[in-house]
Image 1 (cartoon, helix red, strand yellow):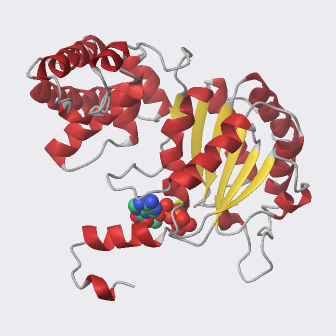
Image 2 (image 1 turned 45 degrees about the vertical axis):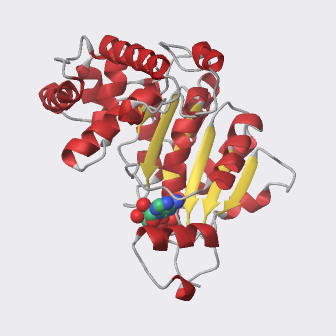
Length: 342
Ligand SMILES: Nc1ncnc2c1ncn2[C@@H]1O[C@H](COP(=O)(O)OP(=O)(O)OP(=O)(O)O)[C@@H](O)[C@H]1O
Ligand SMILES: [Mg+2]
């Protein structure tokens, strides 16, 4: 069972019992436990006390214990999940055609699989598919994954290809407010996470100055809380680039429009925020192993300075969902009079 499958399973359990999805702290606790890390590390990452992390974790273990009818705690969580998977596989084989697994762990849902195909599936999986360590996630600024996600598979495939195959360094996702920029990128993360050492999501909603953003990124990638950084932005940029070369990081800067002036031609920075342009220029121009995704109502001007065929820098214009999906949404909302939906 992969970590993603475990997270999906626990998310379903928590949603069933509380009506809420996992929040980012709960997810971090599960990841840390799965990877054998300490609560203190999660507390440090989330700027809260170890005691608070322990309380949140204890509630999680109680919910999972109820679902599995077995006392679950930090030290037996992983073993219990792996045992649970094996026993579900046995059920699949015993039941013959009916392979609908409890808890929505989508390990083998295709009824047409022959028994041989089923038996080839792994029963336990301690690392991800590529046998690489799982990434460190800092998604405290990211939206939660909601249960309903209407089809964005074409867009997700394009983004995945750019990031994983073309190794784009800078991608701007632009589109009007509410079109689904944050949502699609949040859904992209589980699909590409095995390619990265760090995944960090930051919102620029409160318009932080560049040096605040740089400091926060450098601290997280370096795994230190109070780093003694030079106040010189160029020095900070050089240090960040160095880190982005050493490790493959995915950095999402959401709500970028907050640092642009409104009522002017697109991509013009508010006074005092022009130096963000240097960051984007450097990220796009210099060789490194990481990828920045910028979510914005409008793209930064720097993006247009890169040539059309430079696949290291890409612009993705997110548009609305298809008519088919719109119909599905109306149907899910219980609307009648289908002939009027158009
Ligand atoms: N594919 C989708 N399926 C279901 N709900 C979606 C989808 N895309 C977006 N939504 C929902 O629409 C709302 C707006 O989406 P989102 O916040 O991602 O937009 P945005 O483009 O990031 O907006 P803004 O620019 O204002 O930040 C959210 O409530 C989100 O859950
Ligand atoms: Mg958004």
